[in-house]
Length: 219
Image (cartoon, rainbow, N blue to C red):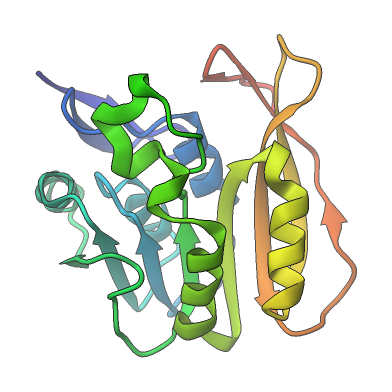
């Protein structure tokens, strides 16, 4: 079954399919956190239905590229991009196999949940074994320009692991924006902005708030 939804913050239409993992609050909050200047090249790792490419397009990039291991998701992403009048290159590839000149910007909402029988239906999109942090940071090193920027969202409980991987790969975490579910006592997600090399001190930004997966209007 298919349905047309509208992406939060930008109100762009997106077709979603019951058989393909839906864009959700994580997608929207990461998309709303993008703040790069126009005219840059952008890679979306694990593009799924193309939602993050749609958010990125609002910043007028020079090139948009999305990769994914799910061919059906890529077909739907192409449909969504055409629906929104966006030109992008979509490629069926894993991150490890993907070869390309470095990009100015990388955007990624990687799988970060532990394996669970309930998640097998959307294994590529949800299971952290599909794209471990080691593979992710190796991909960053290959595919980001020297002064490039990476935007990612991840489960908050793995923040220390990300900080270690970033240090090892010589990336600086420029900012951290926690995401809180108002019904829980601790952050569930972190949105991170990273750059190569050593830059300014890390900023901890005002948190986003959600309730039962819905974004609260007063953020």
